Length: 159
Picture 1: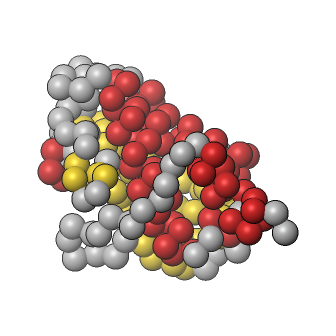
Picture 2 (picture 1 turned 90 degrees about the horizontal axis):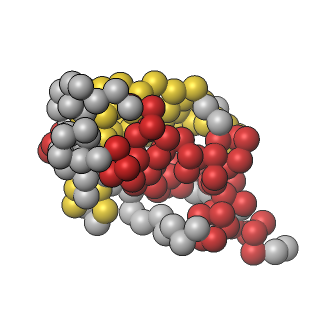
């Protein structure tokens, strides 16, 4: 068996992209990081933290550029993949990404919300290929926990 099959193709792709999945972020309130209702995993919203520290703080379109917003959404998705690996044990169990919801802490005049959320969507497709294609909503909000730039929720099908 090759290394790709031992880890699963998704994890091999992450390795190839130099993305290491760490410990999933701990919930910051009285809730679970995910709930499993076979064959689905519902992942709670996560913010762009690395090592427990918020990396992107502020309003996109005001304190942050849309490119920084894109990177914030990508980091949120890396955190979701960590939680998903924790839930499933192996990302190869993912059959499809069903729904992505992204909340963007945006200046009221900022309208490029889809571009920002592509940071998360693009990573899913890079890692899972066609299985990573999904329905989604990009929602502009007035505030997010801790002043985070982006928060992302995910619904995933698995076997």
